[in-house]
Length: 130
Image (tube, rainbow, N blue to C red):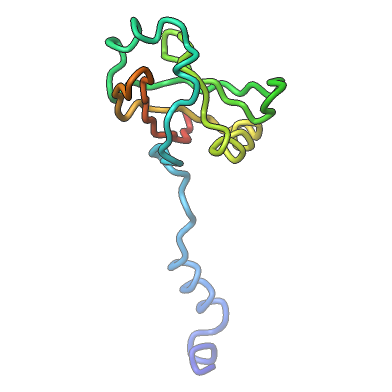
């Protein structure tokens, strides 16, 4: 109360306002989750494609709301448009909502390795402003 009398309410509000910083939009991509690509065993030609996949490769995500078995389906493609598989069903509800709201998401290949006849592709999914 003493501050209000000494400086006046307007002066106090100006001082308080000067200390408040407005949040800035993020400038870096936001990491959302790490998962693996589902369905690579059903992808014809994955054996030929595997040598060309490199950790760090940016991958494209495409919403497929008309998918009859999963309305939250999200397909994953290489930058050249080659289908790799899908975001696993357990991971796609929130990602699908973000994409449906107009948010831009992409994936980056983190690692790859064969587990018998399954090519395990681990990806990181990000939200971006691009």
